[in-house]
Length: 340
Image: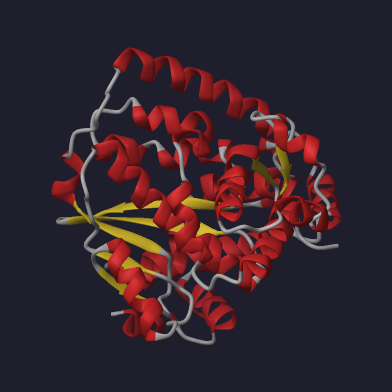
């Protein structure tokens, strides 16, 4: 059994369908091809399984025959595309405040990926970790997410703002398409990167937004918190719950299976069984998160190897060194050197 992809909100699905309709794609055929019940798509508060969303995007890619579908579909983003998160961001006072609201509320949009924000002396990097494995879908989804963020920020600020730098993991396309990326983002765009990120100058974070409302913001955030609590109890896949719990535990320097199971109010044996039902295991979850966090710290911090090992719950630097080489084929030192 493959690893579950969680869920996607109907507003997120509708953004792609609005694009496809404009392209003249037979959306009903694509919806049927993906195995989605059309009635489900009429419920703005509804959600569909991530596997179905991935199949739908794949069908739309084939039907539209657009090599820049991800980039072009970003033109159809609306505040509602992000569910209540979008309206929370609308109520913020600055771009910086809006960006801070991405990670805590992105579960309301779906389980398509996780956002991390890294603030440095002169700039801030917004990194998106895509959860969808299909290489064709993954490319377009990454393009869509980063480009949609850009379009939404420009609308919120009522200004043609641009990033300093955009990083994309997929391979460099032909030159005419590269020019389209550069024309849209209005900055340097690197392909074949180790991550998917938008780098913003810190000065841009203070850009005021068009309609800040502190009272409404507080109300919307309270509503969002309630929705997230409900999702965690119902639709969120078990493996994603475990993943979030592991990340939280690693922030404290440990990630023992017994602690994770205790946090989820189950036994370690039940934890293993439920992960196996979703095609995963505790060790696989832990290794995936550790390699992501290790790569991040090696590439973007000056932490020593021993400190990184400690932060990831390893007993010593040698264990981390051996594990990292097994994961990536490179030693931590070599990986760091290649990242600079």
